[in-house]
Length: 406
Ligand code: SF4
Image (tube, rainbow, N blue to C red; front, side, top):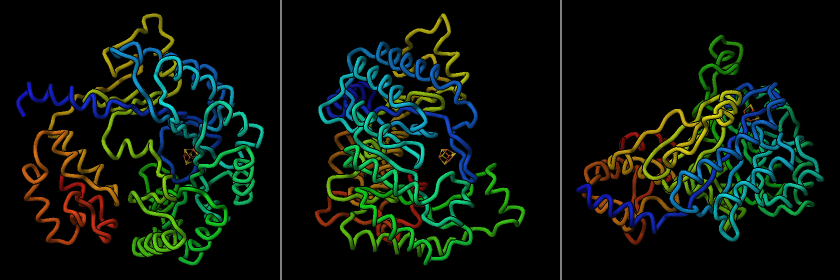
C-alpha cells in the first residue's frame, strides 16, 4: 500500500478500532512456582506502595503523550500475583485509569488472583473498586500436581476463594488449569476438570505445561529427577477436556480458552484481534499506533524511571519506563494479524476485516500459503466462505501453522 494510503488506513482504522485495552502488570509473588518464567519477583513486597505510585504516574504520562483522551474498554491486572496488592492499592490504580482515560460503560476489569491470597472482605472491596472479573490460578485439584508445581495453595483454598468471590458479588470467574504434567495420569486430569466444573466458573483457560528454560522444573527434568512430560498424553488430555467442556455448555473460542455464552474474555480478544493495548508496569508490553513497546523489567528500575526528576511524557505510546519501541511494518502487522487471529478457533481471520484494515485481500497476500495449509488439512473456510480458521486437528499444531505466516 502506498504510504499516503497507509496513512489513510491508519486514520480509518483509528475510527474503527480506537478503543484500547489496558494491561497492568503486578510483578510480585509470595514465592516462585517451579514452572514459571514470568517477569515476577518474590521477596519484594516492600516495593508495593512505591510501585503502585509509579503505575499511576505511568498512566498519567501515557495519557499525556496521547493527542486525545483515549477510550478504554478493558483493564486487566496480570502478574505476578495482582491479588497481593491491597484492595485500596487496586482502587488507587483504577482511580488513575478513570482520571486519565475514558473508561467505557460496562468496561471489563479483570484481576488475576491466587487462591488463599484474598478473603471475602478483600473481594468485596475489590468489587467495590470496580473489578468485575476474577481469574483464579487453580492449576490442579491434586496435591501431587500442586506440590510439583510448587503452588502455595491446595484445592480447598480454591473452593474457599470461589465461594467467597460469589458471595462478594463476582459473576464472572475464570479458572486456570495446567495439564500434561510429568507423572499426571489422564484420570487425574479428568478428576481436576470435573472438580473445577463443580465450582461452576463462567470461563476456563487450559494450558499445556511447557518446560521453560531456567525454571526449576526444566532443571529437574534435564537432570532426570522428574520424567519429561508426555506430549501424546497431553494431546489426549486436551481433546478430552474440550469434549467434556462442550458437553456442559462451554464453547471453545481460542486454542486455550472456553467460555459460557457471552463470557469470552474481552481483554484477551483484543490481543487476538490484534487491536491496540497499552502495557503499564515493569516488563509490560504494549501495541498502539503501530508501535510495539516493552518496559524496563525489574520493579526497582521501573520505580526509579517513573520517579526520576526528568520523567516526562514521551511520544505516544512510549513512557519513561519504555526500553524498547519498534514501529511495525505493514508486513509485520499482517503477519501478526494472522498469527493472533488464527488462535481464535471459532472466529478466525475474516476477509472483510482484513481487507478493511490493510486495503488488500487475504488471498492477494497469503493465497499460496492458505492453499498449501488447506491441502494439509490445517486451515478451512467458514461455511459462508468469509473467515479462515484452524481445523479441529490443527489446534494441536497451532504454533507450526502460525510460523508459516511470519
Ligand atoms: S504465582 Fe503465577 S506468576 Fe507467580 S510464580 Fe507462580 S505461576 Fe508465576
